Length: 192
Image 1 (spheres, one colour):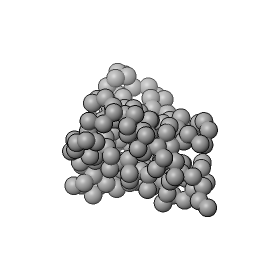
Image 2 (tube, rainbow, N blue to C red; image 1 turned 90 degrees about the vertical axis):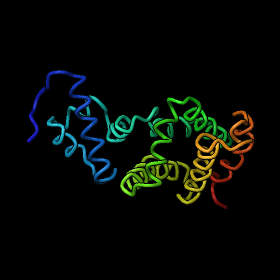
Image 3 (tube, rainbow, N blue to C red; image 1 turned 30 degrees about the vertical axis):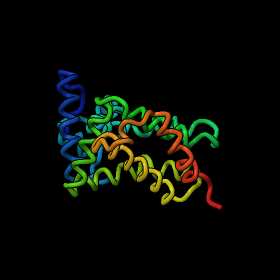
């Protein structure tokens, strides 16, 4: 049973929570891992997880060492005129992948998901719940359309940053935005 109250060593406790979260997410997937289960594994009260990380989504982002919280990124992309949504999406995506420190965790997760079903399950559940479902609901478009643009963007990331396929790897961000923003806009437009 988890001990109530504060533990000594804030940094040590935080790392213990992150380690427990990584194990739970890897073992049970995003949906199967609970805040209470992670807290129990770390030997802390669940309230301490909320104190350090806020939500389960934020805990996942921290445990996976993501450079951004995807839920916050989705909120910023959705803010603003619908007519420029595609451009905001592509620019936000490129900004996350622009710096090596930012893209390293994503590349590691892509590679791991390609060879490990547990990692693939964890990513699938997390992306579906925190990104795809939220965007589809907010824009009132079918999830398959949101998934379509997600597939396109992951394909660009794979070819541009992992495989480094010319000329995509050498293209400027503006060229990528010019090429992909209309496609993103199409996918995210209301069907009809």
